[in-house]
Length: 137
Ligand SMILES: [Zn+2]
Ligand SMILES: [Zn+2]
Ligand SMILES: [Zn+2]
Image (cartoon, rainbow, N blue to C red):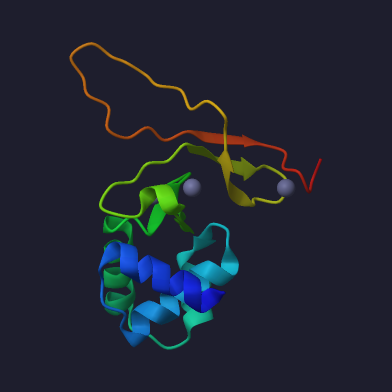
C-alpha cells in the first residue's frame, strides 16, 4: 500500500526517487496528518538540514506537500491530495487548530469560498480556523 502510493506520487510528479526523498515521503504517508519540521527530523533520523529543506521545497513545488502557517514560529507540512499532483496546488480544505490539544488538521469543507476583489487576482486562499477538535469536544 505504502509502496503503491509512493509509486503513484513519483509517477504523477516526474521526480526521481532518491533514498532521502523516499525517506521523507514515507514519514508523510505514515503520519497522514500535518507534521512539524521537528517531527520530520526525528522520524527520518540522520539527514543534513540542507538536504531536508531542499526535499521539502521540491515536494511543495511539485504539489506533493503544502506548508501550513498558524504563526511564525511553527510551520507544519502536510500531504496534498490527488488534486494537487502536478505543478499547481488546488486545495479546498481549511486548516484547523485545536485550542485544547494544539493538534492541526486539514479539514475538507463542502463549499470553499471564492473571494473577489476588484483589480486583484487571488491565486491562493488560505483559511485558518481554531476551536475545539473532535477529540477534545
Ligand atoms: Zn497542495
Ligand atoms: Zn483537540
Ligand atoms: Zn492542508
